[in-house]
Length: 323
Image (cartoon, rainbow, N blue to C red; front, side):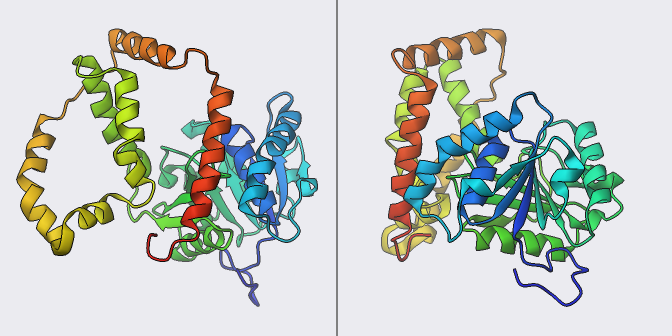
């Protein structure tokens, strides 16, 4: 983003320093990514040992970021940590907030951030479910409040969903889209506030049927993971549902596909389940996943996952026609 003469509108300045407010799993991942893109990061979190945990997470993520390619000036040494929110915000050109999913807490947090920063600095939240229309309610400058929802882990997954609240200005939305795109993210504009935004709603639809199939005894948790990971998940990693449908239609494309498979798809929709996450279903799923995890640790799986993601992202970066 280029600097402007006035700097009075949200985003009308070059972003050199990002304030990362909340440094748990998501915040630490964001911090590592911003550092890898050559930015300064000023972080804060009230939890005990937050600074040590953040620096350890950045060090853990850095090898993957090096493989993807670092921007000029990228360095973990450009990270500073403060116990004070106001001190961490000082000099920030953009804010990425990652606090707990509590509406009352976020309303107060954004009120404090809004009071501490010039009106042109965009305040973005990583919230996965809260509406910015409510979060921005106590701000003097609500027009600069946006949702910048990443997909976990943010230091590897490119998607960011940008949404404004009812008082958010178009300039702030565009500034957020421009900033995320400039640092290598795939930023999309969600045009209406809805629970779960876009990607989480799509995931929820899949989870609902995955839970239903286990509940009905159709498949084990491992069977379902295998079906996705070695079936449609491989195609979805390359292209989204619409382009996949289009490619499945042959020369007739998506038009032929909808004419040919429209009625069967509607019949599958009508047959999808609506499970309740009861104690019995929780126990059934927990048992299935524990069996899948036999002899493995979450850390081992995360390391292999990140390695594969780096390779996939590198391969996707070389394609000409696949988005």
